[in-house]
Image (cartoon, rainbow, N blue to C red; front, side, top):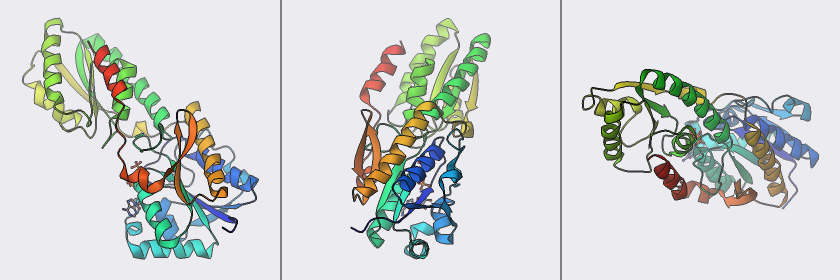
Length: 325
Ligand code: ATP
């Protein structure tokens, strides 16, 4: 294959802390290898609109510590259509872009995989999503910072919950996956953790509340937003009338979980993956995601990351179960 001359980089889907560190790493690793870099703004929307600008090393200075993404991000309905992708590819051609690095989640990789097949352009994915729900990598950029944000908030809520002997239902992000709920629940000593991967949890919740009714102690119940039993308000409503003795409160943590300065783990991992993405292109890789498995960089076919489901580890569920006695 001809050597890559011009590399496009974009962030797509939900923003995640550490995306800037990945953009910086991709840009500098490419320049280090004499490849020109073009930043594509607003994900696939910007690709369709030609919102593209050359990036120099200095353009990515002073961003490693910042949350969000300097390239902006978007969800693009137009990119889901062949016409939209054709327009996007024509813009890539206009700028002479002959390879792409896409930083995003499984939706972004689905789009990348389709574009790569339709136009035979090499695309490397970097997993960037606070949900940690991508198959083939132990870890996605933003997840660690998100967990730390959740833990800080829940610890604060715990103070007021225990002062008033209240039961708090706290909803955290995770439409389809319970990673954030499960690990933050373990880290904060939540009494019950409700996640989409575990079925019939109302039985467990009712049992727990019946026990707690005897001691009248405060409790934290963490709910993933995509739990089968509904959102935190709906779950609280289901038990409220059965347990009138409890002072029940609901908190939705919401978008604070996406923001903030990335943790050291997110910064270093994003830097490693950014460099690895450029090295993968130099090694002639065409349609893969770079990920981390047991602390090492791995390559996973893009179409596999989107087809396969990443389940929460049973060992973590066991830990949560044992510690909830
Ligand atoms: P997050 O996990 O943070 O939500 P994501 O990458 O999964 O991130 P999505 O909104 O699902 O976020 O996808 C981002 C974009 O990828 C979509 O707005 C769309 O432009 C593109 N995309 C998703 N699915 C497809 C598809 N089937 N075909 C073409 N493009 C797609």
